[in-house]
Image (cartoon, rainbow, N blue to C red):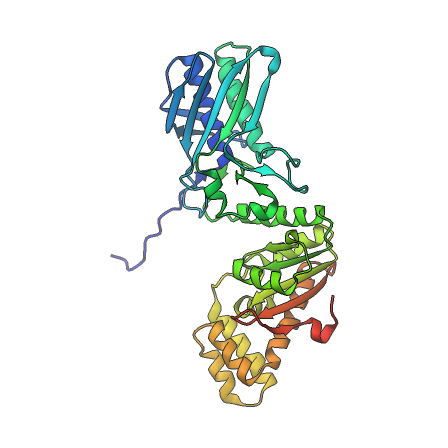
Length: 369
């Protein structure tokens, strides 16, 4: 025993797009190969190959078959992990080509600003390309010139979608079939960043020049109550991605950004943390204690803040004894955000208490946006 903890290598997975391509390939193989396959090999958008087990395969008649696979997100947190993704393929006359549609459980786009036009199924261009190439590969292998109608479906898609931000983006009735490479890298965060980008794109397409950035559902609810005159697309959950979100807000052409958060995230933003995860929270409290020391002469107060268990505990100490620090924190947030955005945005910072009240608002000292 060395005393060191062994670290298990995180497992990669595959996207909903890869799952849909695998299901479509399995269905065509069942039709042309006259035997449902146990697994299929899919070519990813990177050119790499991946073997995927077939969960179910059913031949309806000489022209139509359905297949499903179980999506494996690996060790990456994902609402669609273990979801059943399927494809129903019907062979057509050659001149019909390959036609892809969304069936039950696949969302439909209702707002502009996404990669797919309103009215279309929520199947992004990358996955659509994978589905086409997977089906065509089988047809070519069997020297079959026919076309095919490929309907992608997700048996519990509508239920799964309730655990995603799809409705906010105007994707109704199910999940999205996504994927830029075909592989889900554990803890890569690419999917969340893509969701932030989609949210901002939808907000701009809706004509909004302001985006209200919150870090989660609770802070968003409070922000929506505070800014009730703004349309729903104007609110975007950015999670921990402070720097990236400010850069994207500038890139998308917003003129104004409101940061509406709780104190723990506010302190990290004020300290110019590019990513506001809870790591290094002790360092954050020590910096916060320094701000208290400069603002309030009572030395014991700064020591209390430095020794607080959490930023929430420190918040109540400061709120009752040195509320000026809350306003200072909001001002520092705007400075940090301005730096990340390259000076392209008007920024307002709102810090909520834990009941939804406003504890600090940079607009009170800097003028309202």
